[in-house]
Length: 44
Ligand SMILES: [Zn+2]
Image 1: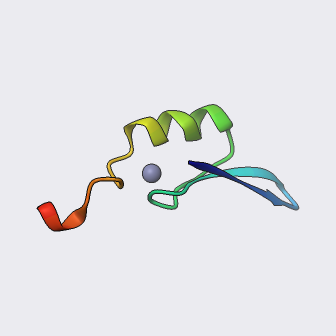
Image 2: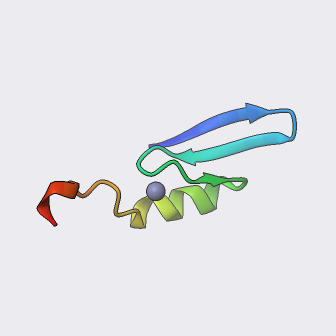
Image 3: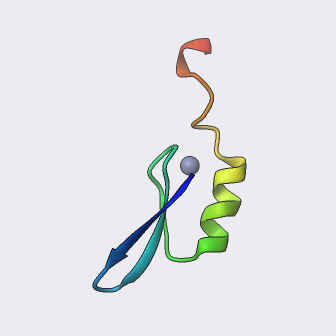
């Protein structure tokens, strides 16, 4: 899920999987679709 965060300098979009912040909703959703953070770390 992309989390919206309202701040003084605008609205930010955070990837809840890895915590990356984006200032553009599209960028955040695109990243999230490709984000690997969902993969369980213990498999590696
Ligand atoms: Zn991510």
